Length: 339
Image 1: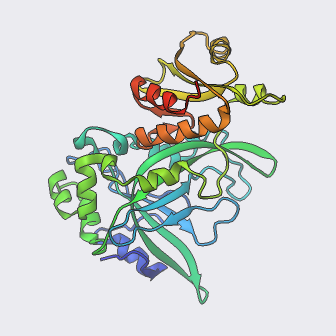
Image 2: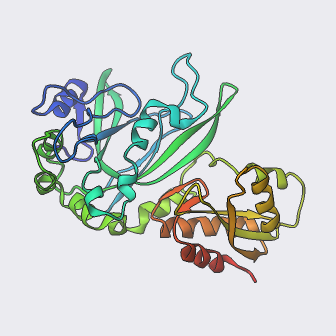
Image 3: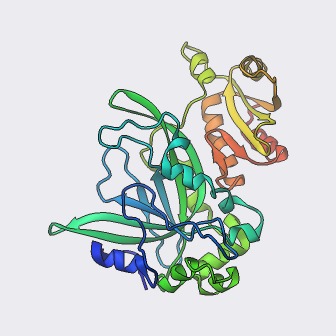
């Protein structure tokens, strides 16, 4: 049994994560995971993955607010693309090992299909710290992915992208029975067998998806409650706003057939001109302007639109692209319109 906030020595932590199996979880920095299952009903997925956070995170610090009794918690976690001693980061976040691994199954968390959610691996959260010179680990709960962004960072004079993950930390009022994690690692256990051992909060999530999670964590993932770097900005917006203007303009919804089901919500002085600019850089001319509204302050209106879109999309977004219907996008824009 593991309880939120429980502190273990590194050796005891390894023993816990080993369970009844031959190997414990990888304990290297980054985003370690148990080995992918080679057989059974959950073949092709990993049993569980870990987000290891540092108590003192440096320049880019993870945020962890653990669940408290029956209150869902929240975590904001940086992916593993970055400087590794003298090795520079990858230019693309998707080329970094841990991020690439998570990309392979992150859609399971956002699926409307219960059978797919039942195969999603729990994200186990722990924190590294020292006590009296002894290396320790603090268990901070289990999470499900509610959002993912690509952010631009600058370090040692180099610009690069990293992933920023948002998680809801599920309630564990009775603690986490490690038999469940051990069962997830056993290819002989059926999906139903593992669900029977799962915490009640996990079973509720599998049954109803992210709609069963309170708005609190999702609002935190969209708000300004924590210090965080900006998401990658639209270069066309950056170029347009170098000069002075009166702040009026439009908030728009654009789609591209290359990303079915996703809608980009952005701002511009003139949305039709922005569409023409996008088409210039697209050999297929495959962008479509779906809706636009006039706003007296397009920056603040876009910010409100992003928050509302994030709630409707339940965190399924990448920067300014939200997984939502066109009807939902129109509702979002009409809500922030000043016309």
